[in-house]
Image (cartoon, rainbow, N blue to C red; front, side, top):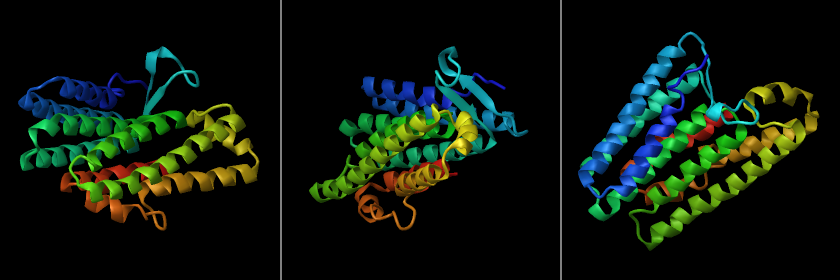
Length: 256
């Protein structure tokens, strides 16, 4: 089953982020950011209703079928996470704006926040491993800006721990994806569910360990959470709330 609503959780914040960066009106930036997240929440609820009977909504971007094109897939689990994430995003955004953000940095904050929302939503609905990597990198790039936006020299040093550890994890992820493609000829998740069974057991086990290592780091799972004590106190309260309540959960979702 297909739906024109499936790409909306990605397209809406992406367009809003571009407009936030281009406009100089502080009011427009705030209204645009809150309105975009609210629109995503509405779309997420609609997708949740459509998938409540275990339907899978599939969209091939540009009309190109898998494995040549980008496939977006929403099931009930993804729609539920989209809805919860949108609720978290809009609550934290309203709180952050109410606390007051320096005028010269508000455009950077709202743009980065919306890009983070884009990456998180793409991670939930992507249908292949490579675009999962892209989603993670979009999310992390935005988080790099947010974690270092209001901090001193010590905070920048602590933020570097977060950045370096995640860059190492991202390097391992792209290596893992390359191995998967070399072994199976695809990175499409639906096709992988069939082809992985034909791979040698030792290679499959190695990929499982590598995958758990990569997303265990990104999710902050024990004993791979060593970057958290430096990263969380460095960021502002709203940013820490997003990191703890949403960002690390992308890693958990990927493992599931």
